[in-house]
Image (cartoon, rainbow, N blue to C red; front, side, top):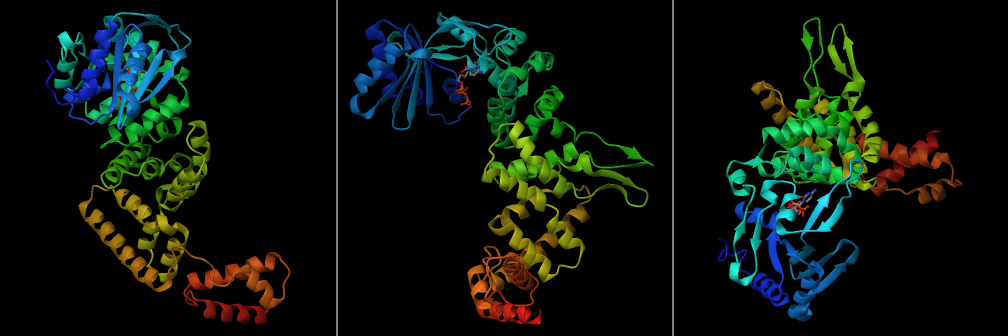
Length: 466
Ligand code: CTP
């Protein structure tokens, strides 16, 4: 009985119950909102299922709430939404669904509360709380959702083969919930996902990515990727990531398993940053390794230019996965491309010029890049890890000093193209660009300071020398 629970004992839910009584309709809060009460998670979206017309009840509720409420009706779907402040109430009539093999779109008929609970994805999402006055707060948990929550298990109410085959997106949802909530997949659920995995092909990429983004934003995203791998969904939805798996051995020498290294980098980064796109960059930072892998009799396994090859793969991956083709993708490309630079700075002596060039190329994303590079240190050799972190600290220090002096992060050429043309009496031509670049290089190499007068003098000097 949840009548006095603060998330159920809300004036707006009492009002919904009263209007339902007046119209002679049974109504229940259902799904994620009920689940999240037990998991102590915040949620403001409240799904209300009505045995009868959801739209009629939504209209009555909106009328009672008056001005402060906003009603939207979606006739084709038989649903309606009432928004008031932060709270969003979604009204839908209880339904029974039957599916055909080649489509996610079911044939929908009116049904009872039980029919409606039967068609839901997981036991933890199928619990309902009655809002009618005489049964207010009564919990209906026919499939043992509470029991499964206590056992931290994701399980389907019906035979999982039916649940997943009906709506294969639920395979992704199962793995996403397991990752978000720190739950396990029930054995039958797991086996069924593996059996039904090919059905994922009827799901649009956009919906798959929506679930992947939720996995990526979880506290420990590796959980989701490992489950995707174990259920064998991974090669179907993201073959390039699957290709990172495995270790090849030659002359007794193996290399790191890039898949598991990648997941560790992702988890390391997730502890430091909530930036979704930086997390994607962590997942993709070594995506070019299989293409660049080579055996060298002296050096053993090498992955030359894997950062560059990886960066080049990203536009195609984003396009196929229907991910954004905008500045977010450019940011991921930049991170992947630059992720080896700080480590190379450490291996050579750290010259001011190299640090300035890195600052110039990374611009305002330099701090993110350093977070990624820190996360990329996954060696089991503690001494090595300490050394890397210490060296990165030195690089950071040098960056701060140089940035204070030269302001390279947001580099703008101190002498502009227009002025070069005026000073040297030039028409627009390639030469102007070359001179501008020469000034930029002189600043990055520390030959001149990043200042107008010095840059102008340098320009006149190199122009006269030629
Ligand atoms: N649902 C389902 N099958 C789906 C999607 C949703 O059975 N493929 C049901 C579940 O009962 C779910 C409810 O619809 O609880 C609401 O779905 P949604 O708003 O997508 O998810 P939530 O469970 O509320 O969780 P989240 O907001 O984290 O996505």
